[in-house]
Length: 385
Image (tube, rainbow, N blue to C red; front, side, top):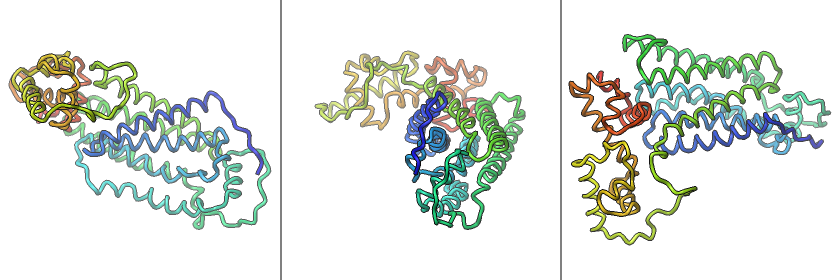
């Protein structure tokens, strides 16, 4: 096999950074959502799948694929995970309950994965020639006696058309869901006060743009030559999502040492069980009686100072006795307080921003995000119900 030169340029660097960032972000989205089966689980799956598809695109774009021929077309079946993932993300956001039936959406992926096994088992020589053709490289193909193509039904050439058709079907149902949700509220898709619908509408627009780019690229370029244009936009989306996550993160509301990394918590703690109970009582007193969580400047160090304990011991007790982090505990009490306010006559007159401020949030968007995470509803929808 001829040694194909590696092509590295600005586009290649952008794509690989997008892949790395995508895998990083998806890890935390999936890790934080998998137990509760929240909508963000499917967003994490979507970003992870897109990252894998982009990685294969990067291998093709740079010619690194010729160094790892066994990875040829490894992400092809993943095309049929994209649309179901974003559909389920939208569906759960709009109030649908998580169900095992949701797995049925991934049947096309499983079928195509099984069918692709015929190709995966082919020789590296065949995959070498296949890549030359897919990327339209003017390099002589290898002579091989292998006649089998790994495509017994002759349908793999239509994978792009099948992907687009699959996406368009889900686009239709996503559009229908969002229009019905707006209609039930007496609003329209384009004119709504629902924070959920506004957020989903923006995500929907991005997904629509990707679909349009996909159609244009596949109808303009032959094989995989223009795929990098799709991946550049997906990279933009991944970085935009990362910015949004970091912008609404509670991390920046706490005190942290420079470049603090994960450690084995409390392994050498000398805190006795009876002392833990005393600290827990003091913490609960601050939460339930003093309502420490209403302070917009609430912090672990501040709570520790209020009860005369070290931050380390307070964190340990919250983690071990309440099975929460400090900020999860604060969020829980704040949202419970917000729910109480929203049920009152005063709460019906206050704006959501005013309610957020009353329970300790400086940001309406942060309040909405946490409220939705803990109740599966926005503050507005909770008040209306």
